[in-house]
Length: 406
Image 1 (cartoon, rainbow, N blue to C red):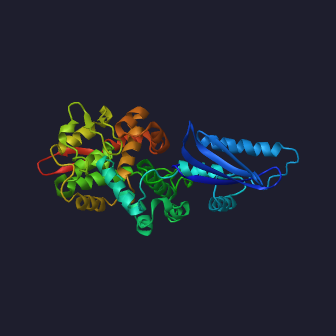
Image 2 (image 1 turned 180 degrees about the horizontal axis):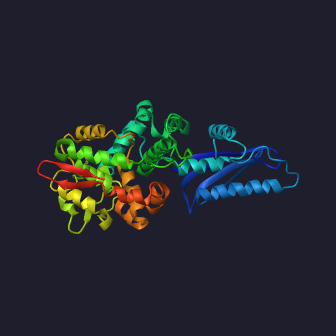
């Protein structure tokens, strides 16, 4: 308070009379500078000096308690309050909006705790900044998927302030009966990642998708290639344009590398032959945007045909120009009956486990967890099929012909 500022409060005396208190900040009177004045009853004018505003509040509280304890004291219809009439009406309105089990104090505490700490931004601006931040921090592998999953929401609500987005508005973009449970859960992860980033930036106080739950997934077996389809794919790759796609299929189908670990991405170059140590039977992989970890892919003696295949294509590019067109042509010529996302990697994991029955070896080579290996890749094929799979390869190499062996 400044000099001359004053506060007026009303209370009720023991006789039921309304008493008005005025607290005014005055020039210092010794060490006391707040003067409290009131009329206790008609003609009974009083004043009190205190040092601090807090002391004034304490004095009024004590006065009220004293009035209540006086003989003949009546029940107070009104209590001393620091709120103005407008503030009291606003507080009353808020209380009426709350359910019986929620106190106003709890609601205010929650609101303050989750109030955005930074500037207010609209959804579209925040999302564009989020994507740029992902690019800057090398977390771009799923950017295209992220944009696709959330683009409709951004289109519909991009103009709104982040703090005005509700759970109900997000829910329709997460759940869709047309999508598999895994896809819906993927949508939820995207929204959670975006809104949690907004909280860290101070744009949001509370994640509007936090109350949405995952859809129950029924874990089916992953799609893999049969021995016949795998053999046909390698044979078609050998025959097509002097095996231009064969290095890629060796890396993904037999060694289980991710496509992003073989082909060039925004963060990394294509797999290079300097990473492949044929004499040591090992492939040295740098950290990928998927796992952010380096790993070595070892080629065991049971997989010697993989070495033979690699020697056949040594020096060729793993990511040739017009790769997608070549890839689709080979797939078509191989007449693979069924194709699914990540089918080459799933195939490699399944047959490698069937061949070795070594969980640790498979997880180290593939770069996924032991739990994933046990959950998805065990018991899909027999040991005999595992042996046969790693015998697919080059039997003879003549001047103008390559032959497939199974």
